[in-house]
Each structure stands twice: as structure tokens, then as C-alpha cells.
Image 1 (cartoon, rainbow, N blue to C red):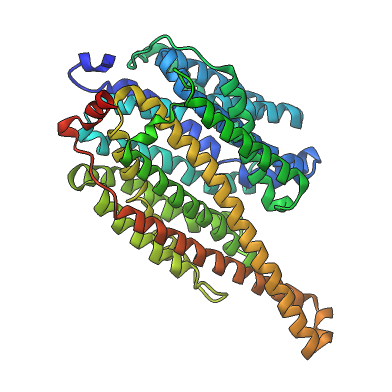
Image 2 (cartoon, rainbow, N blue to C red):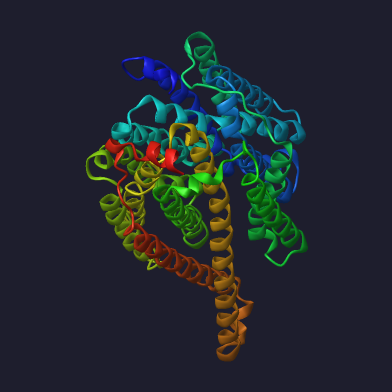
Length: 496
């Protein structure tokens, strides 16, 4: 039983405040990547150093998300949100007015510590505020915020970096963060019921070592290579840490992350499909800019504008998909969505040096339209099968998996793209040596070889992503709608 059940209708004001805070946090998360080269020049640092602004943020989020289940269970949501937003606001101020790179990095760490709680907290309040048969529409609105904020980030960032200063990226976020904090202090109420629970510090340590190692290893592998000793060491240590973390959770009465959520078949299946779809989705977010900017020579701002319609379509479709889920269930939506996604991904693998911008926009938008029919329905269906007490753990598992799989998927597809491009480049160079070695002295000719080689790398990677999407399509055939009218989750909880 949760506190909101004593009310006649969902606490819309509370949800609105949380939505506003989450939107600010999600928007901030996607703003900085475009600005990294400019920051590198301003502070006169190497790329390996400046990338910690993105990598460090991801690492802090990745290791704190598993702890979010404990935080949500133990602390009242009002205090938790105010603390998280306070950390986020302090971090934003530090980053906006940082006199050196160290302060800027510290600000990003504070932002990550606060922002990592926003998504899981909002999702849990959404789950307990709406009956299971209406969760689809509610979670669809959550998806609108989760998708739209990161979608407009790169385009907005590209414009600001091109015409203004990178500090404006933080300065414009700061007043909204302060407003969100003031609204929370003024009007936010406690919705979730809390209970006394202990925390296992060894689990936290294993979580940091395990998930932190995997995330760091995968994020650096694309630049340093999979065979780099540092990458291999962090991946091995991370994998061992995750294994020990999982084993320990099954031996604790009050686990940090209750992995018994995988005993519920639709949650487990939905989670597996989400992993496959996330890997494919992140491939598009990396490969498309690589094609548009590095192969075609289109500016970062125009690149962001090319990808913006697809992201906006995905955001707009999210609440619509939520309502369709309430009516038709997950399988029909997932099958149609994955079929569209797979076809659009295949079309992207056919792009060449003559493909028009309009065609790129249409293919990318079609792909995002297909994905908009998949993620929220299968996640909501899986969460519907969990009893309320496992909601924090279910959302924490989903968010942790998204972070880890997104990082691994990105690294794998970037590695594949670079490997194919390298092999193709060597093949073209050898062909030129055999036919007319003098061509290799022409810089324009070398640039053309590099362009053609990278193009093939992008094409092959998209083709593999299409195959991966096909795997998810096959798995979706086994999806079943959770019968919320019979209280399956509660019955399973009693009989487990």
C-alpha cells in the first residue's frame, strides 16, 4: 500500500514538479558533448582529459543508479528530490563559473550525483500514482520527457557553441534548476511509503568496481582499442565485480538491488529485448553523426538539425504509444515497431556519397518512429508484473542495464566501424599502389580513400544493427500482456 492510494486521483502537482526537474536533468545530460572541443581549447588540455566531462558523468550515474532502489525505499521522496536537485544546482553553478578544468569536472560530478536519482524517482512515483491498467499512458508521458530533452540537446548545444560561449550551456540551465528546487521546497509532497532497511556497503563497493569498470572500459575502448592493457584490465575487473555483486545480492535478506525481479517472466523478457534495442539505438546515435559529419562533411549544427526531426517524432509518439499500449498490449506494438526499425536501419546501411539530406532525415526519422513503439511498452509491461515493493528495484535494474548496454553497444559499433574502415582503407591503398602509385602523393586522393573507407564502415555497422534488431523482433514474439485485472504480480509474490 502506498500513500497515494488514500487520494482519489493521482498527485498531478507533485508529478509536474518532478517532471520539470527530470527534464532539466535529462536536457543537461546531452548538452556537453558538442562543446568538448571548444572546452579543450579554452583550458588548453588534451582530448583524453576533456572527455572525462562526459565519461565521468556517465560513471557517477552508472554506479549510483543501482543505489537508487535503496534511497527510494529508505528516504521520503520529498527529501530525496530536494537533496538531489540541490546537488545538481550546486554542480551547475560550479560548472558555469569554473575558473579551471578541475572545478568544471567537480561540477559535472555533482550534477551526475543529483541527476542519477531523478529518473528512477519519477518513474516510481508514476508507477504508484496510476492503476496498472492506465500506466501505459502515464509512462508514455514520462517517455516524452526522457526522450525529448536529450533530443533537443545536441542541436541547441551546437547553436550555442557556434555563436556563443560554452558556459551558456550551464548558465541557461541554472535558473531552471533553482526554480525546480524552489517548487520542490514549496509544494512537493511525500507520495512513496518508506520503510527501515539496511544498506550493504560491500554491495556498494562491488557496484562501483563492477559497473564503473565496465562503463569506463567500454567508453575508452573506442579511442584506445580493445587490446589496450588499461581497457582490458578495467573490463576484467569490472566483469568480476559485477559477478560478485550479483552473487552477493542473492545471499542478502535486504539486497541493494533485488535481482529477484528476474523471476517475473515478462519483466525478464522485456529487459532482454530492451538490451538489444538499446544497443541498436545507440548505434544510430553514433553512426549517423559519423556519416553526416565525417563522411559528408556537414557541420555539427546541421548534423543536429538532421537528427532533430527523428528525435522529436520519437518524443511526440511516446504518449500516443502509451495509450495504444493500454488498449492493445505490448506484443503488437513491439512487433510493428521493431519491423519498422529493422527496415529503416537497413535503409541507413545503403547510404552513399550521393544520398540527399532529405533522404537521410526521412530514413532516420522512420527509424526513430519505429523505436518509439518499442521501449516504453515492453518496460511498462514488465514493471506491471512486479509487486509495488519491487518497483524501485525494477526501475533501478532497467536504468542500470540501459547505462551499461548503451556504453557497451556504443563501443562495439564504433570498434566495428573503425575496423571495417581501416581494412577498406588498406585495400584501397594497395589497389592504388598496383594501378598508379603516384596518386598516393595527392592529398585529395588520400582524403577520398579515407572518406570511402569510413563510408563502408558506417554501412556495415548499420547492417549489423539491422540484424541485431531482427533478434529483438524474434524475442518480441514471446511477449504476453500482463493481466492486471487478476493481480498476477501479487499472486506470484504470495506463492513464490
